[in-house]
Amino acid sequence: MKIYRANPRGFCAGVDRAIEIVELSLRKYGAPIYVRHEIVHSRHVVNSLRQKGAVFVEELNEVPEGSVVIFSAHGVAKSVWEEARRRRLHVIDATCPLVIKVHNEVNRDYNQGYDLILIGHAGHPEVIGTLGQIPDKFHLVSSVEDVEKLQVENTVNLSYVTQTTLSVDECRDIVGALHERFPNIKGPHQEDICYATQNRQNAVKELSRLVDVILVIGSPNSSNSNRLRELGERCGIASYLIDSASDINPQWLKGAKAVGITAGASAPEVLVTEVVAFLQKAGCSSEVEELTVIEEDVEFLLPKELVQIESSRKQSEAGIATS
Image (cartoon, helix red, strand yellow):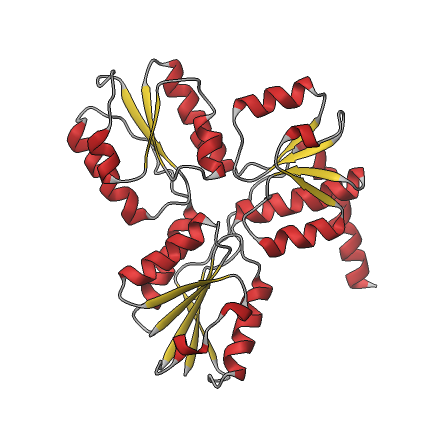
């Protein structure tokens, strides 16, 4: 049985940045550093950072007054910022810049008198943070059926944004339904689904042409990982979401001639390596073929207060490498 690895896979620029923000904050301020919610949706990443001194909390009332707290890559509601100011917390914002872009669109349209629609999944941290940008006139839809039931007062000035980690195909159907029901609706200038989500989905589509089984590495609460598994299924390939190699059921591989591996945007590459080793031990070919759809070179800037310490770290690592 042959193994294919999808590329791109795993960490995106927003996840890289968020993890680096926690690590650099620990270096600059020392432990403990508090993080509101999981910095990214990966049990493995969270456990690793916890071992280094990060303390993960659900709400800000768990953070001692005056402490350093990091907001996760998913973004937060304005009320969370207000609470942090009241409690004199030192906030370092790890919100993905692409999520911030959506927040900016929401605030701009609201200030211009628009009612707004968010395409997203109820209860997801990014959706909670985006809905929390404005006090009213915001509607959440998760399906074409939701669009059909939608009750909107202002159909003249109406706009929509999307959760960044949705399926492109899923969004297309909902956007189509919105335009059909509200012909004057305004969408974002650029599609809000992030480049990494799009690239990983395109890689799964290519993978599905070559394999009989797709293994998607990602945590159960990772939206983009779930979308990858669903996309594999829609392409007609048996697809499974696994948190690690230990979740693989050997029965899934029975009769398969080729297996494909991808990873959600929060899954570290070490998990991919472990899955490959598991498959090879289970009888797969030692040869692993990389299926590259596009090379990613996106980088996001760090918060200003951490730039200097990152520069010092790189200089130190360079010195060690040349010594």
